[in-house]
Length: 337
Image 1 (cartoon, rainbow, N blue to C red):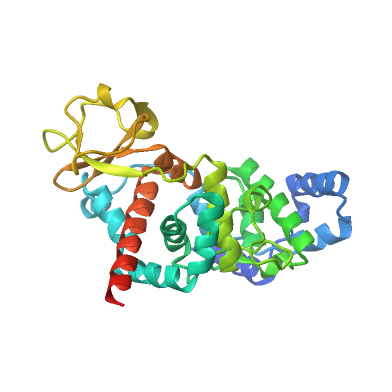
Image 2 (image 1 turned 90 degrees about the horizontal axis):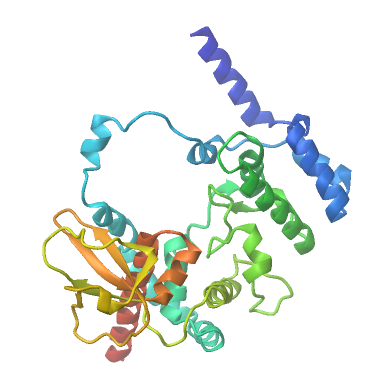
């Protein structure tokens, strides 16, 4: 009991006064590297890392957990129905309704981005909807403290987060922003599209012409997402996915996943549910685990492109289905006028 009490006192003191990360050897090497290679002043970096509030919540996401799930947890989350649970959280009526409103509000910006990058406005809006609820939830964690914690506290992705921390400091410095004032996700992602710092230079677009890229500004977020998809191979005017039929309730005939491709003639016994599907390139088989059966889809090249934004077939399918719902909602709204 005494040990636990002492641990709580030490943790409370750390949260109140912060932790001096300049005392960690890895941080010292990191600072020296930024001074030598990026021409940062030592005093500026030392001041930043002198008083950091460790973010232990985000750290738990990247620390391996031992042991099997408890029986209570297995009962709460049964073997089948993963897609049912996932889609209930992502494709809510509120998210669809807000997506239609978002497209209406930023119609001209979205159309401009669609013409320039070839990505339909509904897919841009859907990603913003999934990532940040159209800007309502851009993150509550202090990005500098979060990235510092993930960069220097032991976890499986230290190297990745040190690179992101370096990019974040550079981004803030060139934009004239105090690194301590930026909030983001548990992984350090920022803004409506939840861009990691490294994505700003590679894909960020100043679409409102104010001289800097800000993923907190809808115009920049819209264009940056479209640019991201375009640079990762989005094909203009091509479909994304279509549901297909097969015999039985559970599908095991062929291997599934967004990284495995097939010519359609190889997939015997599988046909699009809506008849002819005007797509002639290789396809992915995407399996969605539902409680009573497996839902099966063909994924086109553009489906794979969405997985470059987030490496998950469920994520890409939720973006696709939300985009379809938004498009349908916009069409219904227009027909009522």
